[in-house]
Length: 273
Image (tube, rainbow, N blue to C red):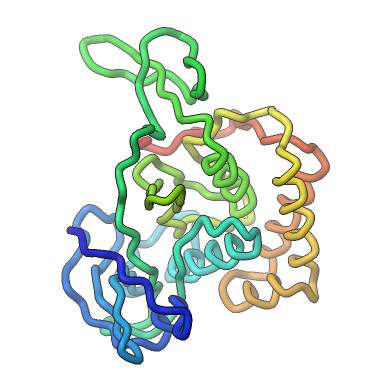
């Protein structure tokens, strides 16, 4: 299902439109594991397409409290905005036709000339690629799964560590044209226990970029007890989860490197794409 992305003019921000507009359900995203409804939202003469995920449609998970996935999606947006990278589409928590839920601006996928993921022969990635791991491709054969050595993906890899993303799959990467790349589906994030599962391991063990270090310093200040980001997260995740987020930022700054898989659990989500 697709529709043109209609961004509101500057007089009405995307967040205002999502939070205050009239929400009309147009269909359901059947591939989603939880209820995800394709909608339009109209406010002050402006309209946009969006995704609405009601809390009532969330499937229980053994390692996350029931009825908290929508709040975690909004929390991921708040952290993304605090980085200044704009990696998560505008997302709000609001009431809707099926109760409270997450409402996120629909991003129209724009296929890029350069792929973000690929399967290649051999044991080493070529120039411009980073290795993820080997994958079975049928008839007893394997191929090397790689992702692009792309600064946008590298920023997203840092964000995923901060929010402790347990499910960064290839299908959650949305190139939007004009050089923009968004990440979506952040319901299983912010767990106080380390649960990082991602495709973006290509920089594991490498030094963080200077840009990432500066962004992490900004996040650290914003996550202090009286920080601006802490204030926005307080109604979305628990105090313990905020403290754990702060600790992850401090660990990244102390190490100065992208983390490596711990080996204590599967590091790559399934299915990976």
